[in-house]
Amino acid sequence: MSAHLQNAVVTCFGDAYAGIDPELRPATRPEFGHLQSNLPLRLAGPLGLAPREIGARLLDAVHLGDLATAELAGAGFLNLTWSPAVLGEAVGDLLTDPHLGVPTPAAPQRVVVDYSSPNVAKQMHVGHLRSTVIGDALARVLAYAGHEVVRQNHLGDWGTQFGMLVEELLGEDLHDPAAVADLEMSELLALYQRAKARFDDDPGFAGSARRRVVALQSGDPTTLALWQALVDASMAEFDATYSRLGVLLTRDDFDGESRYNPQLPGVVDDLRASGLLTESAGALVVYPDGFTGRDGAPLPLIVRKADGGFGYAATDLATIRHRVDDLAVDRVVYVVDHRQSHHFDMVFAVARAAGWLPDSVEVQHISFGTVLGPDGRPFKTRSGETVTLTSLLDDAEEAVAARYDNPEVVRAVANAAVKYADLSNHLARDYVFDVARMSATTGETGPYLQYAHARVCSILTRAPQQTYPSTSSGHRAVGSLSHAAEQRLALELAGFAAVVAKVADTLEPHHLTAYLYGLATALTTFYENCPVLKADGEVRQTRLALCEVTRRVLSEGLGLLGIEAPQRM
Image (cartoon, rainbow, N blue to C red; front, top):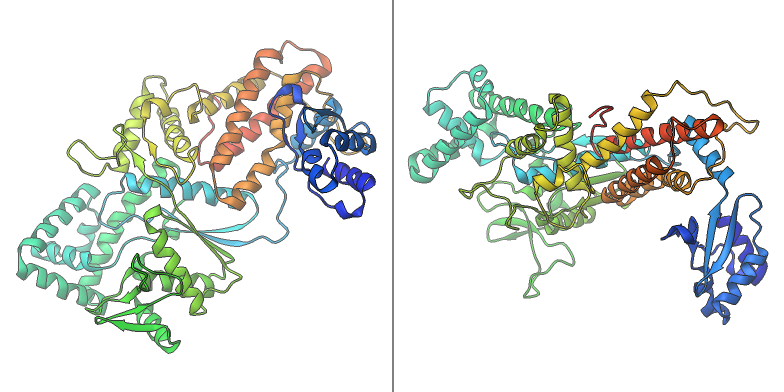
């Protein structure tokens, strides 16, 4: 359609306007057809003509044949309406395309998606929800769009706290790594709280804990064995949480900070050799160009602290080197909350200045807002503590449990409620965790979309299996779509490939949630106005084809969000 309008522009106004984008957009109202373009309005200035005169000339010059009809409306809009036969053909194409129109990219990328990142020996909490859910959805979409995705879960499994924890284990006569590895997360949390209290109150214990850190970094066998046991115990808990939430992270994706500890001295040495490193009050820092404080003074990125310890920046720089040099990535996506934006900007700038991050590699920090409680403040328990992720999921399951007998359906619907509520918000915005609203089966919610999928499955289950013979052009023989509700549904279905491409490019999942909600509402209108099983002949076959493609798009689309699509609810 765009090409036809572009040719008409050249015919009317010459080669100077060749290649102009008609900027076709879905019509805002049914009476405006299927697509709209404001091309006459945009050409009015350069051409010095009235928009409606430009539109009239374009209509005379455009040759759409049986493809569509076009009309001039308003101050200078072109309204275009696909022919019923073309819409039926589009449905027929989708019917037999296993990838629903999503093309293979000309240049597939190798993409690291860094997300979730819990801390060993600590429970996952509300602060991990968005990173986990958003990162999982982005990884799914990028893979579906044809890219090679490397999932990385950058665990907090190194640092001062582990000297403290190991020292506490030894002080409590817990020397057996196997027993430590069997500890549940509640026991690990209690261990951490006891160790932290002693660290704060007992200078002797604090000194021993610091020496234990040195022993850990030096590879002391006893210390390393207990540290590994703590990691194993935590990973078992993380595995259970990811499985419950339906997140595609496994132990193979765990990429702990400990991995990079041996590389940190080399990071310092190489930064020094490149002339980027500066000493400041005993610390070793880099002053990347363009970063200043409120007073205009250059801001430092601390690579090694004054006490000789390494900061997060050193680990993040080593991580970038690994991903570029060893994983050979084209793109790295960090799904981390907005409070880390400045840190990542500085790390990326230093990595590029050092030559570790070539211009050919794209790095993106996908920041996001905060999950708020009912009071509109960051979510806390009544006692002021951070809400655990497990308790959030428990609340969601409790909210939907009364409606279903099947525990698997309860979990699927609860997860849909939580994930859709998160992903349907613009990433930068905070949102309120309102379990009653997000678990409703009406309105823009995950359960509503699941119901739409179950409804269309019910129709198909009650119909005999259909066959759709090929036409001479290779398309499936789906009849013309004469009813407005059929046409609207077909138009929504045809937009799936474009929205997948948009999310893969922008990394903004709310475009997909909005698309699926629009598809579900179009299905509802179709269901109410176009009988399927009571129809006869070609009409029945055509409507069943629409149902089958809708089922597949809803199932695939929900799957890209990490949401299950039950056949029955």
